Image (tube, rainbow, N blue to C red; front, side):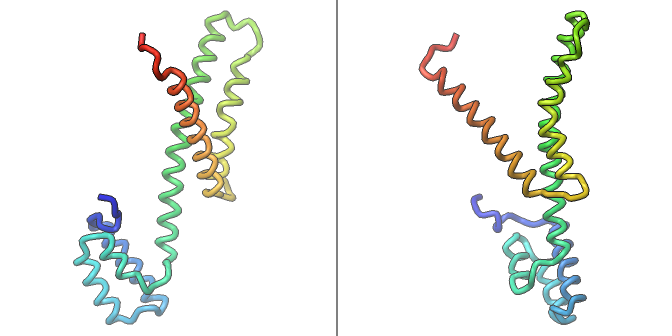
Length: 165
C-alpha cells in the first residue's frame, strides 16, 4: 500500500487522538458537543485518514509534538547503538591483536577506540545531552549512512563482470 493514510489504526491511536481532542477542549478550541461528536468519530475511525480528518481544523497539539519528538529520539538512539556496536567490535578486535602480540608496546588500540567512537559519543551527547539537537544528529547519521552505501556501491561495481571464485 503506497498511501500511509489508508493504513488501519489501533486502539492506542484512537486513545491518543481522544487525548489530543481533550487538550483542544481544555484550550477552548472545541465545545463539549464538538468533543463528544469527535470522540464518537474517533472510536469509529478505521484508518489514519479518518483520524486526520478529526484534527484537520485544529492546530498541532503539544502532546503530538512531544510524541513525534520522542519517536524520533528513540529511532536515533537505536541507530547510535548500532554504530557503537560496530565501533566496539572493531575496538575489541584491535585490543585482542594487541594482547596476542604480547602487549609490550604502548596501547595503540586506544587510537582506534578514540577515532571509531568519537562520532558516536559526540552524536550521543548532542542527542541525549542538556541541549538536545535532534536535527543535527539526524543529518549526521544520514550522511554517514549515505557514505557507507556509496562505498558499498563502489566496491560492488569494481567487481562487476568478473567471474566469482
